[in-house]
Every structure is written in C-alpha cells, then in structure tokens.
Image 1 (cartoon, each protein chain N blue to C red):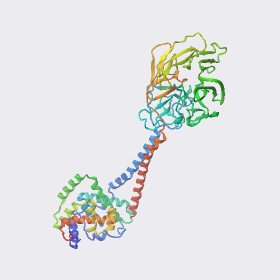
Image 2 (cartoon, each protein chain N blue to C red):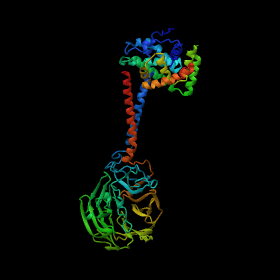
Image 3 (cartoon, each protein chain N blue to C red):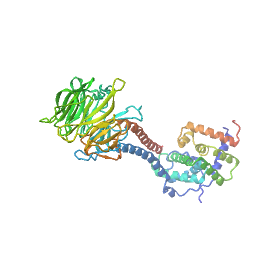
Image 4 (cartoon, helix red, strand yellow):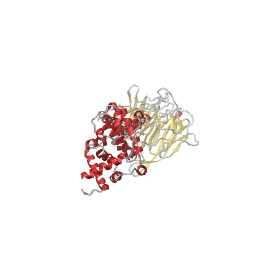
Length: 175
Length: 442
C-alpha cells in the first residue's frame, strides 16, 4: 500500500492558480490534504476518501476550464462534506460519527485528543474553517472562498471555534 | 489567543488529521470514475427546470383543457339531435363567456343565480345551454345594469330576453349595457347587434317567427308592458310598425299568421278568408302562450291575480286555456290547471312543456300522466327553451359539463401565481447556471 507523503502541503495548497499544470500534478499533491480536510470535517475516513475522489472526478471533468483548480477543488470538497452531513439525519449522523470515531480512533496525544474532542462539538463548516486555517494556513479570504461566504463570516466562525478549542485545551490565559 | 494555544491547536490538529494513513487510488481510476457529481449536478440543474416545465405544462394544460373558440362535434350544417340534460349544471363562477367560446345553437336560455355564495360579487348569469346538452356559456353583453332591474306594473321585467325557435339568436329588450333599442345576440359568434330606436325607446320582444327571421316586439314606456307592435325583419333590416297597444303576440307555425292581443281582444290574422271571428274576447289576466305545431290550437295562459298586500299583485293559480285558432271543428281540450309558479315553455307532441321553477314537465293536453323531463334546480329563473328544437330534443342523463374557457379573472387568478412560480423556477435555473459558470472561472 502506498502511503502518501505529506511534505510541503502548505506550499501546494497556497500555490498560485494553475500551478498544477496537469490533473495528475494536482491529484498527486492535493489528494492527501483534501482527504484530511474531509476527514476532519466529516469525522469519517471512508466517507472522506469517497467524497474527495468524487471531488477530483468532478475537477477532472472541468480541469481545462478551471483557472484556479486548487481553490475550486477545496470548494468542492467542503461543499460535498457539508452536503454529506445534510444528507444524514441528525441522529443518524451522530450515531455514524460516533461509531466511526470509536472504530477509527487512533491513539493520540493529549492536545490532539483535545482538538478532536473540540472539533466534534463544532459544525461541519467550522471544522473545515479550523482545518483550512490551522492546518493549511490559508488566509481568511481564501477560507471564505472555500466556504463560499464572506471573510467576516469566517472570522466570527473561527472565533467561536477557538472558544471551544480553548475550553478543551484548558487555555485560561484570555478568559 | 496566546501563541502557545495556537501552537497547541496547530500541532494537535496536525497530529489528529495526519493520524490516518491515506493511500490514493490510481489517478486513472479517478479519471474514469463515474461521478455522482455529474449525476447530482445534472439532477440539481434539471430538477428546477423540470419543475418549471411542469408548472408551464399545468398552465398550458389548464388553458387547453377548456375548449377554445368553438367546440368540435356540432359543426355548422351538421345536424345533431338536440339534447337536454335531465339535470342542469349548477351555478359556477367559472362558466365561460359566450363571446370567448361561442356555441352552435342554444337549446335553453335562463337566468341562474348564485344561491350558495351570495356575497361573492356577481351573483347571477344569463346562461345559454348548447343543443349538445354539454356546453354552458354565459353572456355578459346582456348583463343588466342595476338601473335596468325593475318591472312594469303588471310584474313583467323591464329587461327580458327571448330565445329564437332555432336557438341561434337571443333578442334582448330593455337597455342592456345602458343602450336602449332592440338587441339581438348571435349565439354562433357571441356578438350582439343593437338596433337603436329613436327617443330612447324601451323594447320588449314578444315572439320570434318560426324561421327566426322576424321578431315581433313592442315599444313600451315604464308605465305599461304593452305598446305599439313592430315586426322587424332581421334579414332585410326593415321594420313593419303596426298601431295598437299590444300585450302578447304569437306567430302561426308556418309563419304566415299572427295572433295579436290588444287589451281584452285577440285578433287572429293571416287567414284568408277568416275562419274564426276576427276578435276573440279574453279577460285582462290572459296572455297568448303559444300556437300549437299543427296550427289548430292557440294556448292562453290564465293567471288568477290577487292583491299581494303591497300594492301589487300575486298569482293565486295559473291555467292553460286552449282555443281554436283556425276555427276548424277539431278537438279543443279543456283547461290545464297549473301551479302558480308554472310557465308555458313550448310544445312537445301532444303535450305542453311546463316549467314550475324547478322542473320541466310534459303535460298531455288530452289528459294523462305528467312526465318530468328535467330538473333545472333552484336558482334558475326565466327559463326558455328553443321551441323549434324542443319537439325533437332528447332528454339525456347529464355527463360532463363544458363551461368553456375560464373567465379572464379566473385565468389571471390562477395563471399569475403559476406564471410567477414558473418564472421564479426559470430564474433559479438561470442563476444556478451563472453561478456554476462563475465558480469555474475562479
């Protein structure tokens, strides 16, 4: 099994449009971070892989017409993750997510466990925003483009998410 | 946020997100992946489009479900035995206008009131029933103005109408649409011709000639329903004014003779040499009802009027009296006693057709059981049948009712919201397409 190397992820994610001249380039560089984005947003690795493959398939169909394929890919992934959540009823989603987390939970350190616990309490869009901000290091403008909202919305969304994270991580400095 | 917290979030998030091992499938598998996205995109684009198409289809079907101008089946020149339903259709606000969808010929004309929802604006209609027994139309050209309501001292309405024997015309007296004169509605076109008279005279149509070419009417004043008689020829447009103060009139079955009532005398003209006394004395409460198809009998309607306590009169009883119109020694039946509400509608074989306000009945003039022909239902008044069609008409079980195209207000009431919905759906589709296009370009 090929394990994808996560090197230079941020550089790839924030690269200028049309850095990926071919679809293969885009796929090689962006598949793993997009799966992780979907994984953090949905809480389910199988669902994340399935959604991201769908997203890449869609990008492939439109690749020649895309001026910024990476930004478009992020938007499609986030959109599909949120749609995935919508398709499931609240109870089913919670049950599925809980079961998935129980099954797939790898052993994590204390901060990672706290982050995971905090993310479970957030909405899918907030989870995506947190990942795009603190994992991919995107600006609020880029995050807004991915979430299809205004930068101000991203700012308040991240602020509320940080409040939850702060509680879980036990940071009392700014309370 | 402290730098330490941010660092802890970054590291914790990275540890959490990086934990699962990810193995990307072959890029060729992605390239050949049957995308749900394509289907979903197609579905999301098609769904509103299909909805819009469905709405448009409903609008089109709704307008197509009702016949447009004319209805196939009874074309001009193609004779079909007239049919009259045994139960008339109830009042409906959705009955279409004759002008929007004319019929071939009317077998019945009547005023129908809306008894169920009296507060809903227009509460009565002049309805024409096609001789196919299916199509009902109303005619707005004969809508009386509020000032047109009222009656002469003897109770006769100011505004009266008279269906021609062949059902192809309706003469309307009074002042329909505020215009005095003689108005004739053409059933086959829905158009009305107004023959304006000098001095803004009010008219009251009395009788159509059997061939429907001539119309006898009187020019009246508000004080009396009687007046000077005029025979108007619709084919030539010529008037034949006659003196006198005529109250009732009938053409003979062959159209050559006339029975004219002036005061307490009825004059039968057209027999040469006259075989009956030129003057038949009647009482003031008698009116000519009709001439029998064989030309032998003249039916008179007798009304036993009594004071109603309000300065007017009320009928206590009615009867049909028959007299020999041609003086031949044939059989003359005795009086037929009727309900006070009964009115003479026409002849059907050896029976007279009587309408009592609710049902049509055939009453044999020589005696015998009365046959109920049809129920007109409550709310119907001033019923007339096309006397030339009545003898051969068949009374049939009511089937579907064709009220023609909806009135304009109803089409607007339904079409505007549906059209708005359709437009909104189309706008949504357009917006989605633009948005998708904009997304591709970013």
